[in-house]
Amino acid sequence: MDRKTEELRDIFMDVAEGETVTEAQEESRGSLADRGDVGQRLSDVVAGMRERYAFRADLDDEELCTLVRGFYDDETDAELARTLDISRHTVFRARMDLHLLRESDLDAPFDIGVLRDRLEDEDPLTEVADDLGVSASTVRRYRDALAARNESRGANDRYRGEFDSILADSDLTGGLTDDVQNDGLEDATEDAEVDVSF
Image 1 (cartoon, rainbow, N blue to C red):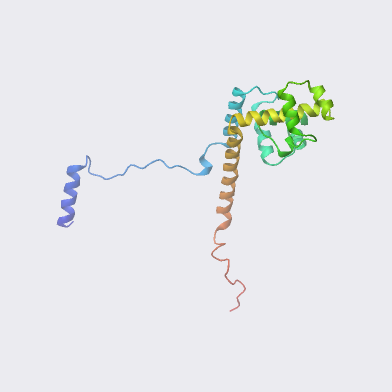
Image 2 (cartoon, helix red, strand yellow):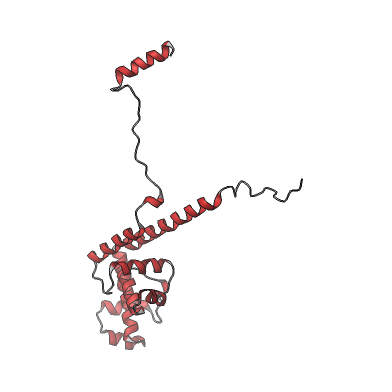
């Protein structure tokens, strides 16, 4: 050890409390895969919604989480009904409870604004249905969709955003791990000539 190194060591020993240098390491932030179990995160959101709103569908949290996953996998209400062994009406009601609206849910065969106005005036549903030329059950369906949209907007679409985030993280994690496994030397050998005779 030369003189300069010894001087530096002596200065360090005077300043430091010990004779060894070990820098404290911060805990790793982890990867997307470490962001918690997707099922648990979905369950937490569903439970939070159940606490805040009066759910009308008679499904437990596990069934509702299955419904959320199916909805994000673009399953139709009929497919979800088969998966959960329930009626399509119950699927629709559960989707409304969870603020999971499809574009078609508000694509009415009549002016949806008229229905909204009539509902605000608290006109009887049968009367509204007669005036609109549809069944009372059709009016109830669009009424429920409007109510779910308003409830979701009242919460700044918070819960739909949380579902989006959880399931997007899940898809992203799967995609990233698949890419890591598949990429390897693919990019490096992309333009290489492989059919070469010597």
